[in-house]
Picture 1 (spheres, rainbow, N blue to C red):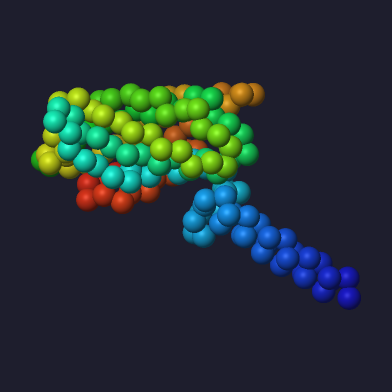
Picture 2: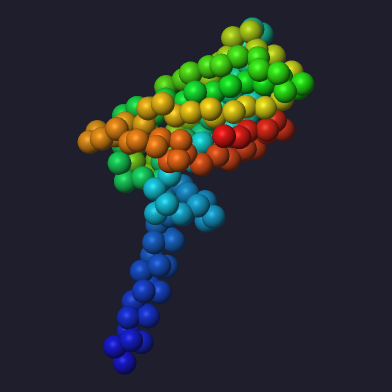
Length: 149
């Protein structure tokens, strides 16, 4: 009888956690207990003198990232490096989705072939600076270009 009650309690706990996950803006396929930051390349649009990138950052952790620095490398359609660009994406609230709009000057969106997340040199929370920052970041892409790490 005790084992049956434990199984029932576990199922209820799982159902409540799944419901809370959907309510907090995380997709059903993403489990915030993985304690990762999902970096989504959501949209790219041409500007008169720049290429604008819309990056969604979903913090699955229970802590605020005061700093989250992204080292990005842009490749043209021939897989030749166009430029390297560093951007500060923090702060990011705990268990929150944020939008970072990035204008890269003198970059042609039409000639952009791929984007590399080369490194995450800094991922600092209020209480510690995490060592292996790039391992904390998962990638998602909704554009036609390749986005990889």
